[in-house]
Length: 474
Image (cartoon, rainbow, N blue to C red):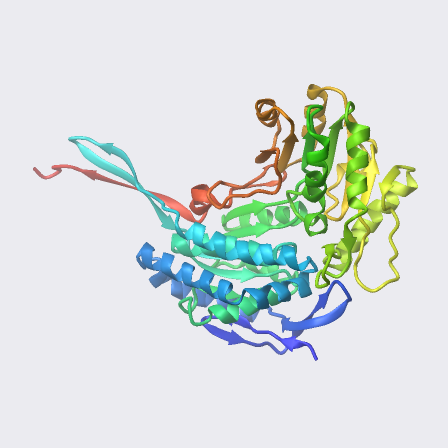
């Protein structure tokens, strides 16, 4: 029988009569039952957060740091249980689940170390003016299913450090590990400062519209981000949106084929391609296209697709049926249009589990759906280019601008190309590296605002300028 999990509301673990089933994407079996919350549970969580904000916002920042570090301790101390649970609900191989759980505690500690220093605007004989940062209030965090733990803590830690309180909604597809963490945190986080509630997709709009929520921080699709922005506009909630990406990698002709082939593969296929900053389009210079495309395809054939809990699995299943169907649709569209496949291209939907074989396409046209749309699955189109100016134009010809990468034997040339890409993050000769001390955010329809670093911490605050006239009554 599947285990039942509870929500964290006002320092207590709470059940609901209505529940949701959580499936293991490797076998489509129910691996957990979680509460299905509605308006009443949301109201209770928000009220708890509002009440806690009165004292938490006045708690010394070093005391807030100490709580965040204790929350990180709890994750570290339960590392093995948590990574296995994460694989069971999300599908990623154990090694990648270990990286996510390990990164979650490390990121919390890093974010807890940040400072929001006051700025002196004027210190003259006449007046002293300073700018300080004050917490926004009650935050709603809405988290996706691809990195459910990592995305949760990167919202919770800066919210708490800034003096805010938070109501967090995990994805209905992957709430279990987060709820287990909530149980570990129950006696560490002061009551009401962290509330974690689960529900169907309908819970999100209730959060966006709730009059006592002051800020929304959301990671997910651009389409949902637009709806959140529209809903938040009604009472001018602050918002941070980290949305979709159709990230381009550019491989210049001086790149070392033997060294970059495996890295390019994993830049696309880590977490079965379900990463907002994964390489979704790879442009390879015509001088090395044949050699490099063959090297990538040869490596791909050595990687095992299967249950993430099984030893040797490199790429796990798609996380949920809806996304599985969408990836299958994109592959079928490519087949219908006669595009050439170097690897994969055949999906058997009749088996158990949401498995898509590693699929690599050979130079499809720029307007192909498999190129123009974000695949968010184990699918990678390779495209040929001739000149640097041409490939920069092609890479930038997208509504998205989240991340990109340049691969070259000349780092200076790589930086020159990187500075011309219209994205929030560009890597030169590496991939998927995000620092908790550097801001992360998108351009264009990939969202706005930032997470991580001091810039991300500021997203949870207002500025307040205090000006004192000296000797006013002298």
